[in-house]
Structures are given as structure tokens and as C-alpha cells.
Length: 123
Image (tube, rainbow, N blue to C red; front, side, top):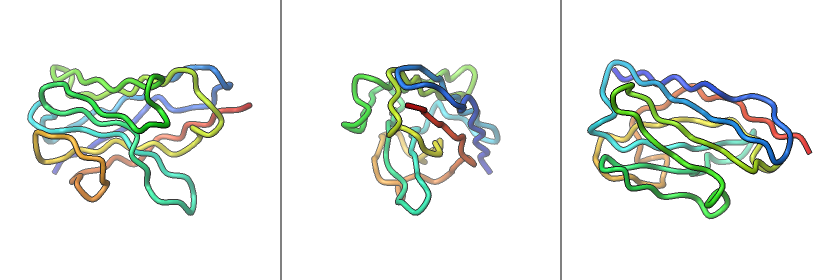
């Protein structure tokens, strides 16, 4: 059973930066695609970014140019660097692992999820 634990969320002013981390245990991320999603209360979970086994990445249009996903296989950890944050980025952010090499954008394509870390951006 893979366990994913997110960290790094918090309160930041608009224009600021945060780096989220997702540490995996009980399995390796090196052979799996990883993704970040976010969800506001009462709304559907929304795709943010994903990275495949070879390092290829894809981003939601709303975060392109501001967010960067990366992976450190030696640490079994995935990161989401978030710059130029906006109030509309306020959400609960989730890390997810997909049993497969290629990234996908649908939450249903991912097999394991973390508990989430809250990001709040003040105006």
C-alpha cells in the first residue's frame, strides 16, 4: 500500500511563493507518473500538474508559467513549486500516484492519494 504525505502548504500573500512536497512510502515513484490536483469545498477536484517517468510534464492552463512540478526519485518525493500565487489558487492541494509511466489529467486515472495540504493566498 502506497502512502503519500503532502507538506508545505500555508498562508501567503498574493505574488508570493510556496513549495509543496509529496513524500511516498510503501512504493517507489520512479516507475510511476505523479500528479498534483486541487479542490475547493463543494467543487470537483481539479488537475494542476503531472509528471511522467521520463520527466515530461503537463500543466493546467491556469498555472502554466507559474507552477513547476518536479521529482526526486532518490528521495521518493515529488514537488510543486508555486510562484506568483493568486487568491484564486487558494485550495486544498493533493498529490497522487498513477500506476503507469505516462501522466494523465483525470483524477480517476490515479490510484493513490495523499490527505492534502491547504494553500491560502491572501489579496
